[in-house]
Amino acid sequence: MKTTRRNFILQSSLALGALSTAKLQACALPTERKLGVALVGLGNYATRQLAPALQETELCALRGIVTGSPQKAAEWSAKHNIPKQNIYNYDNFDTIRDNPDIDIVYVVLPNSMHAEFTIRAAQAGKHVICEKPMALNSRECEQMIQACKRANVKLGIGYRLYYEPHHLEMRRLGTEKSLGAVKMIESSLGFSMADPKIWRLNKALGGGGAIMDLGVYCIQGVRRTLGELPTAVTGQGYVKDKTVFKDIYEMMMFQLEFPSGAVSNSTTTYSSYVDRLHATTDYRWFQLDPSFNATGASGKTSEGPMNFSKPAFQQTKQMDAFADNVLKNTMPLASGEEGLIDLRIIEAIVRSADTGKKVRLEWK
Image 1 (cartoon, one colour):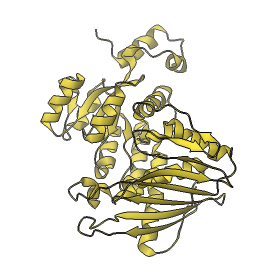
Image 2 (cartoon, helix red, strand yellow):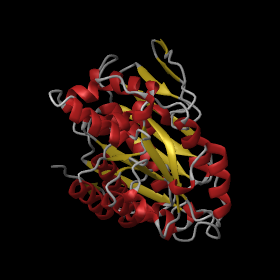
Image 3 (tube, rainbow, N blue to C red):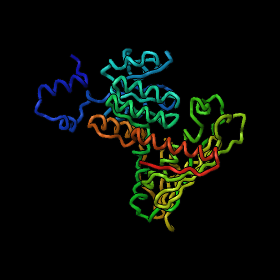
Image 4 (spheres, rainbow, N blue to C red):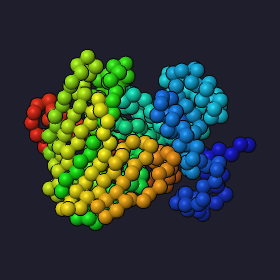
């Protein structure tokens, strides 16, 4: 009989009842026990980043797909050797609960569909990674977190940079104050996207333009470098091309204030290029330029360069880390709670831009 991951665990438990679950999980993981991942949505990110990254993971592997396109289903099945029984569409998605090949569902859909498919995956008993931003608003984030808790499954957000070496070094320098206490940070990301047919420019699908899509990175770059959560935000929104950006801000600038006294200034835009994270102390500094794009960061400090190799795909460590959380029953670093924090900050930024007033933030 073919040995599946669940059969392996059951047989091992019967034969080696004296061994604890913790010891089983600590053992070297054989190939048969790689956790099966199903990608929900086969757009550009899934095609060019996640699928190739899954070819290099140690703890998980691409085992299934969910798509509304029969053509994509056939192409992916042939290219990635995905059997027919592991191919789903959005209507029969819930039957994935009966498939022991799938342990993790990775939601890579437009933002408006994140909450629905995260909750459906949890109800099907599958662990979930949801792409960023986590949802359209903080209320949806809370519903997603609760659904995963009720189903006793793990929830992670697709924050690849939580595991990227340059960003980890920025965090170390900032929190350990190796070059002094940070006083000011600049954190900005933008590129040109002036096509109204792209779903990210549709407020109902994307939730709010560049601040939703790119603002997550800017916020994370700042708060993770400092190791703090902001206490106040001030935001400004701009629209130059009203024929393209009809219901969303084309560009947003925002400032975050932190308990230590540090202040950040950020720009997110869909009309020009910027990609950097720069922190200053007294007369010293450390920075990434570029910082946030998936092709790799480059860093240096006032004392010299950061010498870290660039992984072929940043998502490899991200997905292996989540698989490790599943196997060891530990909390993901890039958890649903982290996604909720970012949405609360984004909502405060937009509220400030809409009202022209500073917005205070309180954290439990």
